[in-house]
Structure formats: structure tokens, C-alpha cells
Image (spheres, rainbow, N blue to C red):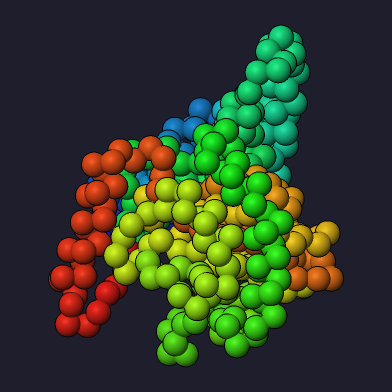
Length: 393
């Protein structure tokens, strides 16, 4: 085989010709190279670059398509496609192509310096197009939304924002057991839980008991109590730290008799809630205190079979709570129900501690039979791991 028929030699000679400005020779050598079976991605990418330099858009497009047929996620080929479409004035197709570049590109700091400007441009073009698309949709939908004013279109509005990249899509991310088919939600409609009326009505009595209970610092425990040899990740700062603390009334399904005796009004109010029965796990109920200047990092809960209720008791200014895309401020006496398997986090940027009554309930979409089955599963899991104690859900 003569050197000129060797694929590696053809590649090297074509590169030399290209950098010397001999585009015709570079194009001819690469055309011979891509005729070899399995010539590889790089040959087609190089040929696309040569065609671009020659102003041959048809050849450039064919070479890019061939490269992406070999590897549809090749970053350089995607950059070349986006650039070609932009030069051709195909702004919608170019926007999709720029979006593909932004989607497959690693973080900028991990990119070769010569690729960073192209990826930055792709990200900027994608964002600019999304802003333009969003503005157009807002204007186009305005008459319809005005016509439907007074209707609850919150889900539709959020769906549009997610499509446009204004908000993220948050789904249930149950850490251990995910009950398939339950509709994920951040905050549930308050009217779906009429039994909360009685609990909210008892807010003053519950707050009074909470204030007395939290004076006993010995009775308080850190909300997080991981062993030091466990991976802590985002919990390192709060682990075994009373900045986020709990006064347990019911813990892992067991009533704390001493604490419950000190809080009769609270326990009476909790009796009206459909708390889940999973032996060794639920129900749970506690006074939760978050000290000033404390942030609870974003996280998700263990199972969507149960939801979490907050009854705010003492809330200084500067406190907020995010579930998915929605951030709310606690208002004393106004309870809410949320799915803690949707990413959530909390802040107390105030100057005093925030206290709430927190407890869990069955997901209302579970039938009585399904609740019974979930409870039985908890017993079965314990039977499987009886030698080492309960684990997981």
C-alpha cells in the first residue's frame, strides 16, 4: 500500500493542505479518505470544515449528516450543524441545533479552550430563542387567558413555563418506595383536606404547648442524626446540629409518652388526621424548629405513599419554603400539605427561630385496600431483615 492510499496518511496530508490554504487538495484527499469503509467520524468532520471554507453548503451539509450518522451526539458536528443552519437563515432549526449543542456539552471548565466560545454561543442562542418564543406565546395566549380569567390555570401556566425553560420540571423522586400512579404535586389544594380546619382552629393551644415544650432543651434532638462514617453530602453542616431540631411527639410510629402528656391539645388535634400506619416507620409528628440563619438544602423524601403537613406556629419574617417550582412563606395558623418526594428546601433568614407542627398523612389517592397493602409491606420488610432490625421504607 502506497502512503497516499493509507487512511492515516490521507488524513495527515489533508490537514497539511488545509492549513496551507490549499482547499481543493484538502477536499480531494478527504473525499478519498471517506470512501474507505469505516473511515471514522473525524474524516467527515474535517471534510465538512473544508466544504465550509469553500462555501459549498450542500457538501458541508452532507458531510455533517454523515458525521452525525456515525455519532449523533458528537459535539463538534453538532456545532457545525447549528452554524450552517444559522447561516442559511433557518432560525427555528438552528435554535433546535443550538439546543442540542447545549444539551450534550459538558460544563465549560471541562471543555477544551478552543470549544468554549462555540458552546457559549450555542447556550446564548438557545436562551435568546426561548425568550423570543416565550414573549410570542405570552402575547398570543393573552386573549385566551383573559377570557378565562377567574379559572384555575396554574397547572397550565406552569406547564408552559417548563416548556420554555423558565422553570424546571420536578417529579416525585421517592428515595425508597415509589407508589406508581399517584399524581405528583408540590402543594396540594387546601380544600382537599377539610379535616385541617379543626387542627388550624387549635393553633393557639398547639403553639402554647410548643413554646413550653421547646424550653426543655434536653427534650430536643437534632433533626438529622447520621453516623459519622456515613456519606453526608449536603447534610454535613446540619448533621447532629440543633440548628434544625425536633421535639418528637410520635417517632417512627411510636408515641413518645412523656412528650405527648405535655401536649394534650396537640395530640387531640392530630387524632383527626389520617396518619399512615406503617409499623416502625409512621406515623410521625413533631415540633420542628429552624434557627435563624439556617438553610435546609434541597432534598427528597422516602415515599410518596404519604404526604407531609406543616402547621406554622411561630414564623419570623425572612422564612420561606420551596417545593418544586413554588416558593411560599409560612403563615401562622395556615396549614399546607405537600409531597416531600418532590425536591424541597427551606430558609430562615430572619432573626428568630421558626417553629411548626409537622406530621405525615396517607396520600389521599390511595384506597383503603392500597393503604392496607403498604402497611403489610412494611411488616414484610421487617420480617426479611429481622436479624438486623428495620431498614428502609
